[in-house]
View (cartoon, rainbow, N blue to C red):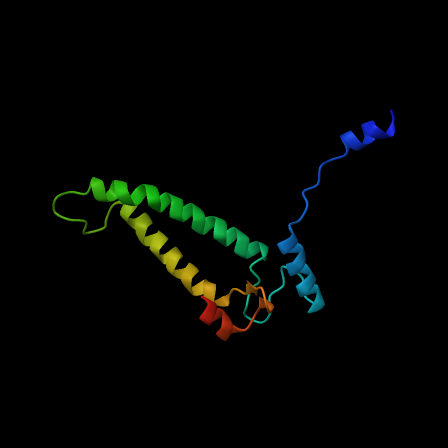
Length: 127
């Protein structure tokens, strides 16, 4: 086996984008890593926040399917009372979306000029 065969058999590694590398360098300069939080402010790269975003995206997709069906096939007497399974699911999704809006005030953001911003006032103004 020659060197060319060894290079072809090496596992492919996914390279990080320039923005991710720049963010990691800025955080490293401040003594932080991408998943660290500062006080009550959570990094947008934290693995818990990424899982939360997947849950919210899944709920949004489910709501995009459920809502039109629920409205199209509602009985003539209106949508109240909400006593069926799908109506309860809509309530749960609205609670999750409300919690997601509140959570956004505690998630740092990446500013091109300042780098990762962890100040609550600036986060609120950006949101």
